[in-house]
Image: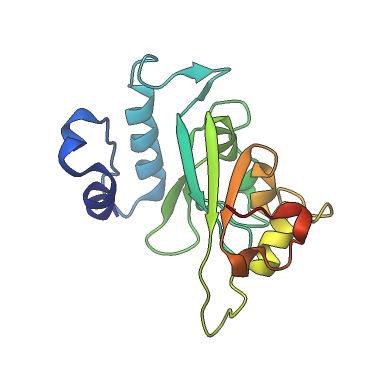
Length: 175
């Protein structure tokens, strides 16, 4: 992921950026601790901190049709962690090797949060339309049942036509 991100987004000016990468171990707890330590070691001129939570300039976040954002999945305790600023990066042991993710409060605190959802497949000919309806418009969903709900009020949602197809006209704009 790091190599792909560098070639796609950073190109020739990557030497001028603060790029923080994971260590690449199979230990989710240690990876989360090490990554968070790297973030916390940045000066507040580089990564401001407000109320104990880092404030990134931009959080570009993908969303799954099950409502997961980052590696915060429905009905898992990680979704509720980090509200006090004590944990910025969380281990997620859902598969091997485990992954790490930013906490929901860290995602929410970015100056600009952009959620991107798109694509169709044979399995999902309407893309993520049902998921986007739940994430954006369904008032019965909670952060625990559908974590993307936690970004509803602070994000710009960029979805393709298929993903927006169940939202209705009041939620869609075209350029």
